[in-house]
Structure formats: structure tokens, C-alpha cells
Image (cartoon, rainbow, N blue to C red; front, side, top):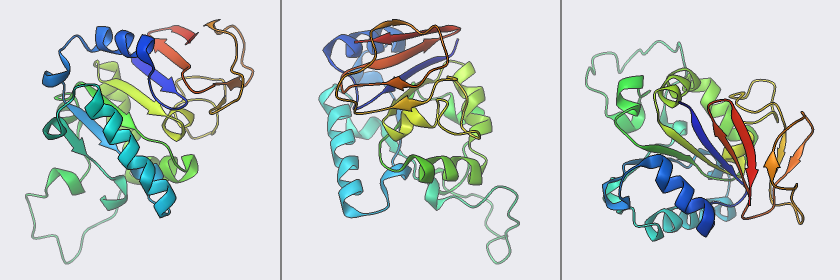
Length: 204
């Protein structure tokens, strides 16, 4: 069953407990794929990568269990290699992961930054296909700001898990509860949209 946590700035105490309930493992045994590709535009954005990693480690996840996967290092989908064609064993960090490899992890975390850049990299590399299959297989998706926007209705070519556009970092977020229309959702820091199967709900 698909499970997505779409957040404005990450998880709070309440939603962290819900997250661990969905993961079903102790933090020290949890394996994470961390995608920083939304935050590579400038040093101000890159600083957010530090914050995201610190938050994951503060949740009890060892840094050794966090696999950093920057999509900017991957070749474009359908690109035919030339002078590197003799290389058969390409390291996982610089090639497209398949569904089986993704499914060896418990959660994938997309950090904040530029949502257009992030989605561009997801689509350029063809990552959306194995990602969606792995999510259906149980890989838990945690989006932070830009990472949430690409899974929602902000872009016509986004992941499409939520029809509603998400506006993160709102001063006052939408009321908590089930989502019943396709209007834009304003998320304040601390709120999340939880998607579990067909269930879609704003949780504070």
C-alpha cells in the first residue's frame, strides 16, 4: 500500500510517531534513500541539505544507513553511452536504481529547494517509473517542501499522488482533516498531508 508523508518542513513529534508506525522498524535499523537534488542551486539551498540530514539523524537513523542519491549525477533516460560503454558495473550512486534496489530501503526522503529543478531531474532520468513502483511495493515517501510539491498537483508532469497543489511554509495552514476537494492546500510548518492507499488527510 502506498504511504506518502508530504510535509512543509519535515515531521513534528506527532507525525514522527505516525511515521515510525508506518515504517514498522526501529530507527537504528531503518534504511533511507536521501535525494538532495532540489537543493543544489546555490549555497543557501545546499545548507538545507545539512538541516535535512541532521533531522534524520536526530530521529535516530545512523548516517551509515542513509544513502545519498543525487539525481543530477545520473545520465538522462534513453541517453546512449559512448566512451563509457565499456564500463559494466556502474556504482549505484551514479545510475538509475531499479525497483528491486529501491525496495531494499524503508523510506525515500526528498528534501526542499527548487521544486521545478527536482521534478526536472526526476523526469530527465526516468526515475519516476521505478520510484512509483517501489512506492506501491511499500517504500515510504517523505517529501519536504519541494519534495512534497512534486508529488502533489503543482505540476502537470508531477508524480500525481495528490490532485491538490501544495503551498508549503504557509503562515496559517488549512484545517486538519480529510481532503474533500481539489483546491490548493496551504501547509504550515508542522503540518503534513498523509496519503495511505486512497486515504488523503491533513494532519497537524
